[in-house]
Every structure is written in C-alpha cells, then in structure tokens.
Length: 207
Ligand code: SAH
Image (tube, rainbow, N blue to C red; front, side, top):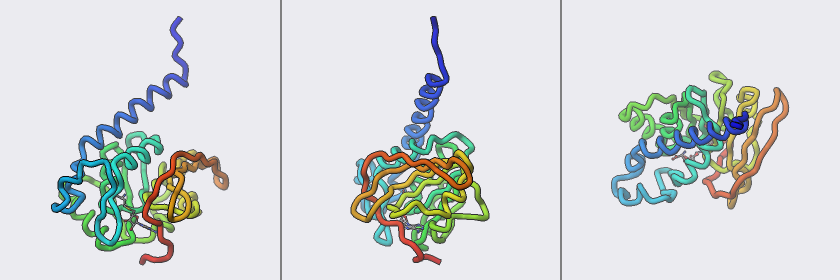
C-alpha cells in the first residue's frame, strides 16, 4: 500500500524549499559584497568585516536563517540589518518580495548601488529596524540579522497571523536562534535552535 500523508508532503516540500536556499547561495556572487582586497575570503564559510564595524554573515548562518523562514515564492519578507545586502539578495533569489532596513547610512548606500547593478529588485530603507515598516505591513516573514535582546514588539505587530519571525535572541556575547510564530493578534509561540554570535541590534540609534 502506498502511504503519502500530509506529513510526507510537508517534508517533501521542505526538501524543495531547502533546494531553493542552496540554489540562491549558488547564484549570488558573494565576492561582490566584500572589498576587492578580500576576494580570496569571499568563498570561505566565515563571517567577514564590512564597513561601519559590521559583518557580512557567514554563508552557513545565511542558509540556516533562510531555511527557518520556511519561505514560499512571492512571500513578503522584511529583513532587519541589510549590512552588505548579501542575505537580502539570497531572500530575493529564493523568490521573496524583499524589504530591508539598515541603520548605517554608508551600508544602506552601498547596498542600494550594488543591488541595482545586479538588477535585484528589492526595497532598501535607511532607518531603525525596531520600528519596522508599518506603512508596508503586514509581512509574511521577518528576519533579524543582528542579535536582539528582546523580541521587538513592533515587528510582531507587523506579521500576518501565522507569520514567522526569525531572530538571534539573547545578550551581546551569545544568542539563540529563535523562531516566533504569530498565533493571533496578541499571542505567539517560540521555538529555540542553535547558538550564534551576531553583531548587536541597536535601539534608538538611527534616524
Ligand atoms: N544581513 C547582513 C548582516 C549584516 S550584520 C549581511 O548579509 O551582510 C547586521 C546589520 O544589522 C549591521 O549592518 C547593523 O548595522 C544592522 N543593525 C543593527 N541594529 C539595527 C537596527 N536597529 N535597525 C537596522 N539595522 C540594524
């Protein structure tokens, strides 16, 4: 007898989605997101310094966060912490409609220029990610790419019911990768995953 339940179908779908993440990582030329001088570091699986004392996330971390988002093509995604624009580009290549916020003007400017050159059609904003983008809400998914001490309440508000927020949650020295699933207008469930170390999510520091 052939058994093919919802669960099997769900697991199969995950395989396909993970395939989307891997394909996106294969497609996006990571060396363009780093200074020329560091060309030989671009394809090492490591984080690396960019301007303004920030880092471009390790490819492993980018894949890890992207998979936790359980993305489907066409979903509206908000990223906090554009940085180099690398993770932004991966989300775009997976097929999401991407909005991303960065609090350092120099990084925002660079990412705008590069992503335009690459013809990646994403919306980049200079601002404070804690506030999100209320005028573009709600989002199907939200991804925080800096270490957050708390689950930012404004961001949960800007999620659709059933939407997922992925964030590294915890103090500056170490965070636990966490997914927040919005159950209804005022409650959510959390799940914890592996430990990571991100640059901090700063509050009330930008525009
Ligand atoms: N996704 C980036 C990772 C950059 S590191 C990449 O792939 O390159 C995290 C970024 O979050 C930094 O650029 C930092 O400036 C930014 N950041 C920190 N706090 C923020 C806030 N409150 N709002 C927006 N961006 C923030």
